[in-house]
Amino acid sequence: MSARVIRRIERPAPELVKAAASYGVATLHEAAQRRGLMVDIHPVVPGLHACGPAVTSLNHPGDNLMLHAAVEVCEPGDVLVVATMSRSTDGMFGELLATQCRAQEIAGVILDAGARDRRDLIEMKFPVWSRAISAAGTVKATPGWVNVPVVCGGATVTPGDLVVADDDGVTVIPRAEVAAVVEAARLREEKEARNRVRLQAGELSLDVNNLRPLLERLGVTYES
Ligand SMILES: O=C([O-])CC(=O)C(=O)O
Ligand SMILES: [Mg+2]
Image (cartoon, rainbow, N blue to C red):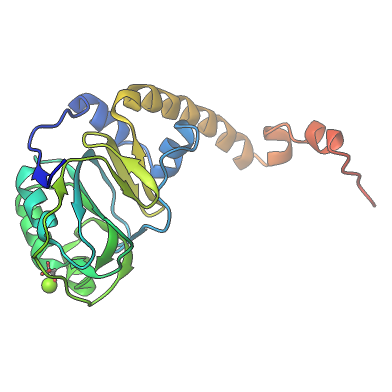
């Protein structure tokens, strides 16, 4: 498929996005049976959370032209996922793009590349996650794609998948699985709440998680 911008994508139902937003990345990643976690993508600004449908941008390394093109097709609440065709850590996103993204009400930006202007991004409290921090500039010269499936942090992101990011990292949930993953996350948090009460009361995780029989089965012996 030649270089192009695809404007129309299917998104998860807004109620599902809202429901998923009440859970952290660790819970949702576990609830998805440990799939979808991006590797080596970290928060640029700590303490923030983003949850929204993915708009994807596939860029030539060292060139952020298609990132600029992708901002136009984002709707309020979307998460912009920026991939490159080969490995790159150049600072292709900074304070000016963040200013534009905030005005467009984009929920967050995930870069399999570098971000820069970190001090400004922190002051703005703009939610951005990246592989690197780098002052290295990028050009705007090479055609690419907006809203095609991409690989970001080792995870496949199809436009309209749900992307969730917080201090623990970034995970992606396929659009068709969001309802099931949200329900699994709810059950998981209920179980954790029950366990938390027992741990606060002084019980050990060995008992709460029924690990003693496992230790025995695995042949672990105790020495006094
Ligand atoms: O201009 C760029 O290419 C990236 C940047 O520093 C900004 O968005 O402020
Ligand atoms: Mg800048």
